[in-house]
Length: 129
View 1 (cartoon, one colour):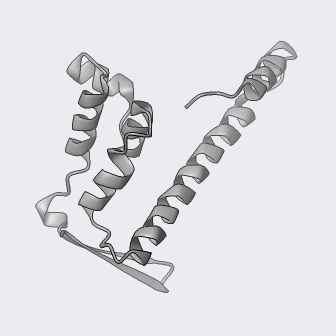
View 2 (view 1 turned 180 degrees about the vertical axis):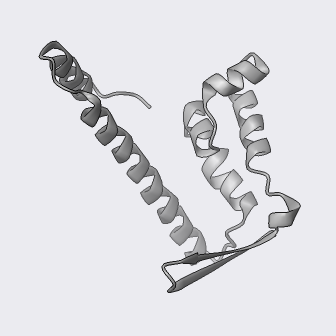
């Protein structure tokens, strides 16, 4: 995640004036996460409208292995961070980051058929394709 100049300026100003800068960072992280969630659901809606099945393979292809997202984002979407990959593999080249992301997101056989219940009004069944 890159910090925009305006946010960096506000952080520096808060540090120099003795104010707490953490709310600015939390807001930035929240905004990034919200953008990811919106993009994720937009992609799901588009896929469903095209008649595609939403599977683990779909997620890997559409959300992890897209060439238009930076390797840092690939790691984040897989629930990893680059420091962990660096420690384990001694590199953070994009190919290695993608390999680690694919290993992390492989569903276990026991979780092949998983049911998620949201707010008692929406059931989502996920089945390995």
